[in-house]
View 1 (cartoon, rainbow, N blue to C red):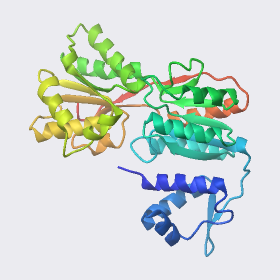
View 2 (view 1 turned 120 degrees about the vertical axis):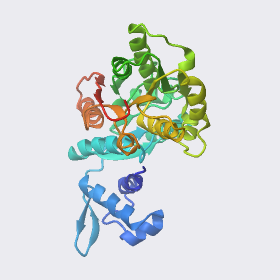
View 3 (view 1 turned 90 degrees about the vertical axis):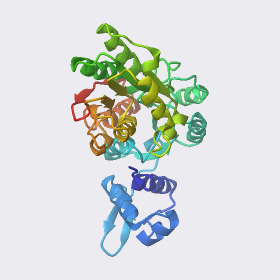
Amino acid sequence: MAFKYLRLAAELQAELSAGTFPDKLPTEQALCEAYQVSRQTVRQALEYLVELGLIEKRQGSGSRVVRRRSFGTDRVAVVTSYIDDYIFPSVLQDIQRVLVRRGYSTLLFATNNMVGREREILQELLRQPLGGLIVEGSKTALPNPNLDLYEKLDRAGIPMVFLHGGYRELENSVCVSDDNFGGGYLAARHLITRGHTRIAGIFKSDDIQGQQRYLGYLSAVRDAGLPLADSQVLWYTTEERRFLMDYGHNDILTHFLQFYLKDCTAVVCYNDEIADRLIRLLLSKSRRVPEDVAVVSFDNSYYSDLCPVRITSLAHEAHKMGGLSAQLLMDQMAGEKVRSAAISWKLIHKGSS
């Protein structure tokens, strides 16, 4: 489920920051033609900009730009893996609501979890005035070639907050993350208490969240004295994600069902989008969920409710991740010392377990 209007809103925000539209935005029809989107997408994007206080709608005069301060120190860059997909729209909305209320303008960028794109964005940010940076690192479990640019931003006095997971090499960085070890432990423990003794797992290998969730899952299984074999755990990368998400060519998950899940009765999935694909594949193979295979995952996203069997999923407090990241950044920008924070999970029991 994509949120196209958020991507359009991000592009319009960039144009507003650049001064492309000093007084008013083009008409809805002109925006439809310029950005090749529907009228509904344009209207949703404009409503979002109104909510952020960047424009105002006046009967008969279109969308007028709200005059704001434009000093470089009032601009905050927000860099995430994606903008209009999965959990990211809500996180970005929460960040922007907090920042805009305090008079900051935001620049949105997406890396697609690619270190090459991350480098391009950081280089661009180093060339312009900037008050602060909220950034989700790319492939945070792997050595990162962009540490030199983060160090340049730090030497330039740019406050930074890392989202979801930072880099081990940047020891003193401020990070707002989920308690992923605790979440992995909680997910596996839930299945253990429901009588499962052979529990498989699917985890992402190139992001630190995946490794931490695996360690939590592993600890719960070990603490319960249950067997654990390498053949029960499937690892996947960012590049392999698109194959996992393809309904028509799910060779990776088909292989998982045949070999990894053969002797298991339950699975802990890295997130809801993977759990959704797995459950749909199980049902297509006449495997019942949860009677034959129970499934637990992370994020309590829209996938958890749209799946044919609603997914038992871990959630954290609404608006916490984005709002806390923005608040910690503003505290840093005000000269305060801040600490990293880990947000705990709560298991939301639904139909899949």
